[in-house]
Length: 160
Image (cartoon, rainbow, N blue to C red; front, side):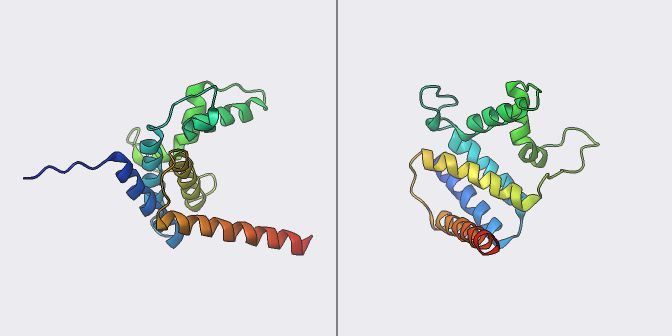
């Protein structure tokens, strides 16, 4: 038997590409969430967890929980770092884990399609921070985002 080593960045790229393909096809969205979440973790571990002097270099999860904490603080409620982090990764973890025998469903605030786009975007943020070259799947996803944005802008202009 021959051992084969596969770099985790390659695994993350494969996960991300598969998540994007599922998302663009509108199929297997739960798989897309799971794969994009795993890609975000693998890519994020290559970045500093926190970088106060250069926050643009830190892992997206860190930036996201800080933003969540600040947003909730505007309501007068103060979240701990753990509470804010748990809110950001809640759906991803609900998909991966079963807390107990009664934990039989996952609740999506905006639906699996929006959640998969959210997870893919987080993974892509880490991907770009690492300076990795785009794959064909990533280019297709970015083209899709641009078309959606242009569609929204066109709709806004013509109706206003």
